Image (cartoon, rainbow, N blue to C red; front, side):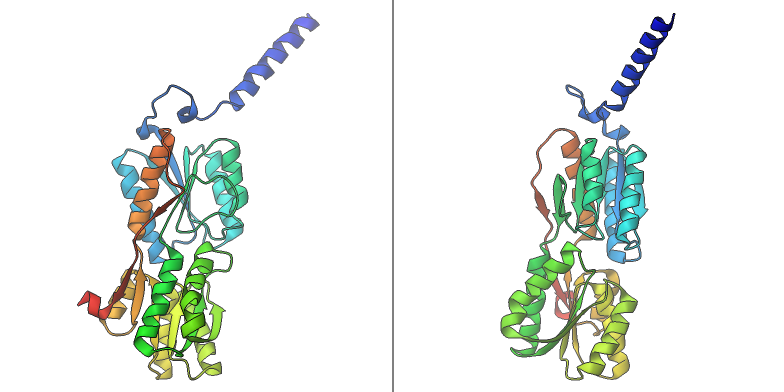
Length: 308
């Protein structure tokens, strides 16, 4: 009797163990994936930024058209929270992960967790340093930084004194936009100050106030996103100075500010398009199709002349 009981327990453990090792339904061979049964997990760095809200809207619109469900989590610019959010999405049994990293290095462990159980990962706007990512859907951030630098040179001439407001340290977009800007600025401009304002409007205002006190002769500002640019303009306006301000993203508030003659320019992205292309790339991956390692989304320099 004891021997029979041991055999039955062994068989039960074998069956349960086998179940836990089964791949997701879409990963089983010779099976056509039904997109209507797909659940997407979308982790966004922050929904306190209109750019990422538009990106989320693009994901949800594209997913709805294909009958997919989307679960959205907001990391609130907290790298540790984002890792926990993604782990929760994995536990919820999502079939596809779309991640807009807060920190490109920090998110790597969460990407690797998804890799270990066969959940495809696509990153949006910012890359992950480690782990297997099917594709990165993003603008050419380095090219955009160069566009901003070139515009400042065109408007003010070589040698103009410029301040740089940097994004979140560790984010790939911060590194790439800064690198592109310095491709131009290091040869043709005088960058007298640079400091992070974490892609945040309030921090942009406070940081710019401090920079103006220490560098009263600043002639232009390049901010790594529009939120910081808008905050910087508030500080400049309060100081009574006239300083050229260039942002990055092309969000609605920035465009309206340019129309009103406040911000000078923004390097405009297409966040909704980033979201839509990410969903389509995910659908292709789930169907077993190959996708490019990066999917570029065009940029455009927007000025008052362009709008008018």
